[in-house]
Length: 465
Ligand code: ATP
Ligand code: MN
Image (cartoon, rainbow, N blue to C red; front, side, top):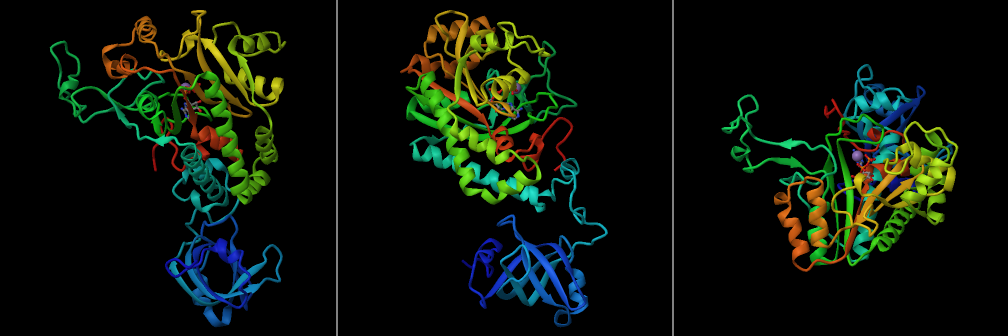
């Protein structure tokens, strides 16, 4: 396929049309060679592999070749040949080279190989040009595509929930305010509080922490829906697993109970992992070689194993009798910490674990209450190396129970009138969950810091690019 007069490197590399002329465009990874011949490794992002361009020095002249340094952008027209050299099957023998953009070797930050991931974070605008980030971005794309594919095939509808929300009761964490008020001189009420009735939306507004409440409105009309969008949490937690802006996939299904919800989560995760194993092999092999020698094995292992399903109470029993000295307490009622989650997954069960029936005190108001009056029908899916990757629940569909929980927690009922209307009119049993896209990316790429699996990470004190 020739687009805009060029063939992609990926296609040229798998071609055996020897003798045929191709035009390739891309960025130079390296140039080496002798007085007579230059070898240029050219990459256009279509694959991790670069194609070797062979250029006759006397033909093109020193002057032109001098401009072709690491990071420069060129167009090459040449003939495809079987390669005699090691490490590639084909090469392009150049007939014509055009330089689109040079990259001064004394200034280009990616002049040398082998930069640390920390350094690359400081040049997030250029890191897509590295093999590592090329792989990560291609996998990220494939994963997003597979998510839509999965739900589309199952008849779920993609609904777009708002990024700006006036509901401050979502309850999933600290929010970022959205305002057009003059912060140095805001309008004040008689009680000397900021008067948000003068603000853009006539009330307080924030960036959403989750699309769930709105997705529920969709599920109670279209049966099975999902959201996939950015969510924002102003948690000041500088951990390798938290971002201030991250993407979340939130399916919400009418007529699903907690077991159906667990089945869906497991099938969905396995589908995505199989998709990546099948479609991103070269990138996975690269990451496996460079960063995590057990990556492909770990992904395959999760695909093969039935996820363990236990209750929170059972989890506490296992942790308490493990003989382990955990940093955080393991008494009934305490939230599970990452050390506990990883013990259960990596050491005790050696497979993903879905935990249900958490104490209601550590979970959100909308979760379905069990008859014991102590626990709710929550489910967290825990993964090796990651800990919590999915958080979900069956939702409380009974109006009286939902309202009593809202009141117990001191949440403003008035702000949720629209949500409560779904329980008032044609309520139905329903369930859903939220999958953190970047947590899944961590698992699939073997990266250990969440800042390295999103193009432009937003974390405390960091929004440069
Ligand atoms: P955690 O306890 O790990 O902070 P949470 O209980 O706050 O997670 P939920 O509110 O249940 O998470 O959100 C659903 C999913 O979104 C989580 O399972 C996780 O995969 C992901 N997630 C939550 N917070 C973040 C964050 N700050 N950055 C990236 N992903 C996140
Ligand atoms: Mn959190």
